[in-house]
Structures are given as structure tokens and as C-alpha cells.
Length: 262
Image 1 (cartoon, rainbow, N blue to C red):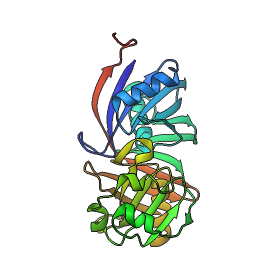
Image 2: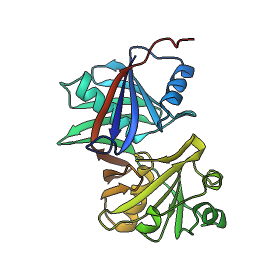
Image 3: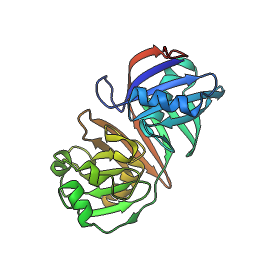
């Protein structure tokens, strides 16, 4: 089984968000795919099986479980297929648990078409403040919990209590603020998925971008994720869909042995 490691949402290695991508002839067992994801210990490992020339079935696994949407691993899978498998096409469609997702090469960016999350405002609570160490000025909830801080510096300097963070609502807990060089900055934590901090998170920007599009009254946003590795996402909200674009860099190509040695 061939495996690629790609740094997504960056134009150079050792930045962005790492994803492992396995292109399969046939599906492995869920146990095997989960074991591979645990062995990689990245936030996501993507598995893809070709169905037609420009269509693949795509699944994402964290070290703990399969999830229904992952942006950076989708970008990584699209990059690998368009650069290493189907070099004569400019777009690939993935059939996923979140519907059909397309990755298209446009200029020097890989553009993804995702569903935008609708959200509801929720009360800012003492539990949020205890988990973050600072009190949010606003909070919204969809699949993920997004807590808004009063400054970019507060986002960058945040040192959350992960145990308490994992007790809050949402599959993932994120913080964001209005940016200076970017429209918004964010950080994303996923203790419920066995991920301390996710370096760059496409799926959570399906919530972050609609929030800031409403606040800033604009549909095109340039977003910065302020993890140690950092990453940049180019986003365009169009109705109930969101186009998220970014760059990608190949780190390595390897072979996973079909059997483990005893």
C-alpha cells in the first residue's frame, strides 16, 4: 500500500497541516485503517479508492475514530491524485460521508467545495472561561464550538486546559478573533478526537468563515490559523457552500507493508 505524507495549506514542508494519504485498490478493514491512522498519529489519515476516472471514494480517520469531514486531508488527497495519479485532469470529486466534495486546481491553489455550517449562538459560560483561561466575547455552535476572543494576541497566546476544553460542547473546540494582516485568525483543539491542537483545519473553517462573513459583511476571506506550524486558507462563502483553497507540499512517499512482523 502506497502512502504519501502531505503538508496542506502551505507551500513548503514543515508547515501547514500534515496528512497521510493512502490510495487503495480495494478497501482495507476499518480496524486496519484505524491502526494505520494510530501508527501515523497525525490529526487525519485519508483513504481513497478510485471509482471512475475523476471520482474516488474518500474516508478520514483520526487516531481515535472515523470522522465525517476533514478539509486538510481532502486537499492533500486531491493534490496527490491530481499530481501523481490523474495528471491529465484538473479536478477530482470525492464521495464522502459529507456528500460529494470536489478538489480543483486553479492557478497555484487547490480549491475545495464544502458545505457551510449553519450555527446558533450559545451563552458564554464560566466553563468556557475556565477551559480557556480568558472569557470569550461571543460563542456559536454547530458540529464544532467556536469561541470568539477580543484580540488576535489572545488567540495566539492562549494556553487552554485541555481536560476542561474536552468537556465543552462540540466535536471540536476552536477560538477565533479578527485579524490584522488577515480577516480572521484561529486555533483549533480536538481533545475528544485525541488531537491536542490541529495545525490547520479546513472543516472548522466551514463554521469560522460563515461567522466572520456575517460579522464583516464580506464573502471572501483570507484566514490564518495560528498554530506552531501555521497555515493560510483562502475562503469564499457562496450561499450554503464554501470554497476553501490552499497550497500543498509533498513531504514523503512510502510503502506500508501488508503484514506486520511478529
